[in-house]
Amino acid sequence: MAERSTAAVDVADNSGDEPLTAKAGQSTSDGVAQNRERETDSEEAQGSGGTESPGKASPPELHSGHKLAGRYRLEECVTRLDGFSSWRAVDEKLRRAVGVHLLPADHPRARSVLAAARSSALLGDPRFVQVLDAVEENDLVYVVHEWLPDATELTALLASGPLEVHEAYQMVSQVSQAMAAAHREGLAHLRLTPSAVLRTSTGQWRIRGLAVNAALRGISSDTPQRTDTEAIGALLYAALTQRWPYDNDAYGLSGLPKGVGLIAPDQVRAGVHRGLSELAMRALANDGATASRHETPCTTPEELVKAIAEMPRIRPPEPAFTAPPEYQRTSYQQGYGRPAPHMGATQPVPAPPPPLQSRTGKALKWAVSALLIAALGLGSWQLADALMERRKSDDTQQTKTPDGNGKDTDKTKPVKPIAIKGAREYVAKGDAQAPGDVDKTYDGDSSTYWRSKSFVDGPEMKPAFKPGVGIVYDLGSQQTVTAASIGLRYPGDHTTITLYGTDSMSPSASVDSMTKIGTITTSGTSAKITVSKKAKTQYVLLWITAMPYASGDQYSGAGYKQAITDVKFTS
Image (cartoon, rainbow, N blue to C red):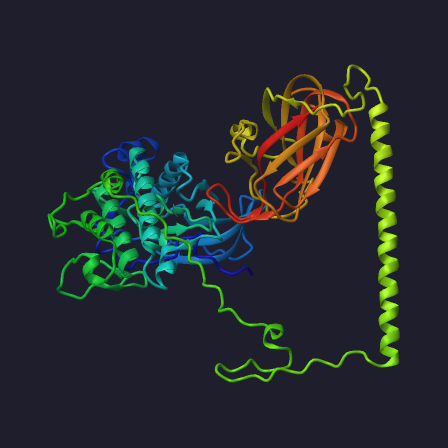
């Protein structure tokens, strides 16, 4: 069984709830989502308060290997609490890891969980862990969401100490902006704890459990924007001090000493950034108790975003360079096989060897002299011969008359770029990848790209599931393509690309029946295809059948995937 990753499923954790001004019920935004939820579901979706009991509902008796909807295979239970359970699972249809929340259909909060999951899925913001499915089936309600095996919880990051100041600045900036966007759409989190905030391997911060985590636990608030803002302040406080800003221990962090009240982070730990310390206090302000300078409290994520924008930007730390090792003398400099001389000590000068005075020595000197004379004579003759040959060659070149008014008729025909007039993603089987991004492959900007999704198996793609991914390019008219250069985002073993000539932007024929133009396999981030069979065509299919393994990012998890940055055709 694969190693457990707590970065994808919210681990059951009720500690730290008291400071959040949360009550039982649903997870909504200020006076907006309540009406929306009533229109979507019945009044049962509203819950019945923080003392709500699951009643007769009990956690579904499921086990590893159980399959939901003939598609989601449960692998490992990571949470079992208050009538619901959370699992690591595998989506066998798309061959990727997912997380699943499960609860009985007769659970008092089942309707609220479904409504929250569907509302969260409609947001579609990549800064949140995405809800992929929300279903009621066979007396069960289950919510399927992304699994991020390469992400790390803020809880785990703080276990080794406070965050570096730029990391803390990035965390509070990205989390505040994401929550401000969610509240504009009428969604609140209400359980924004260190275990709900994740940092990916690319340094991006993502939030999981929007609306859903609160609905699972029956949490709501009369002032959800204030609740989420205070939670962001608590996250920043913990990131700066490695302490929880209340007098109780929570999320593996020690609370503040009892009786001292809420004190600023720069009074808890030396060296804390003053601007971030004040920002945390403005977000944590309760009943007018603000920081020492009495700044205006931030009561919504939007106000927190504006306060961050007004701060001087915190730049990342300069990269640290290690000093080169101290210069060491080599054995050649010290005298091979002898210790280095001591300062101040007089070293005896060795006597030179006696000259060759014997009969054998004299004969050797004459032999060496003769060889040197012969070598000089031979070298002089070869140099003279080379000069004569060069003069003859120059004379021959001067007597030639150029053809065609001096133009070289044998010169290679210059390469001519072919302008791309349009493009469309080609889907042979299954789902599309990123059809809205195909124009980014020929916009002249290497920082933009079209990407595939992440696949479990590779590098070769499985024809029975997905034979390949690609894009059809319109060259405007019939063109003879002689070469193509393709920029790729991910290196590794390995990427296979084939070019085909086809009859339209949406070919109905199979790839095997198209005219093959050229192919290449590369492990780098660029591919140069020289056309092996020249043929005129207006439409060219760029078809990828093998992709390297790459780590997760803000668009997809780790797996076999590829992205195209630049495509150029020449004739």
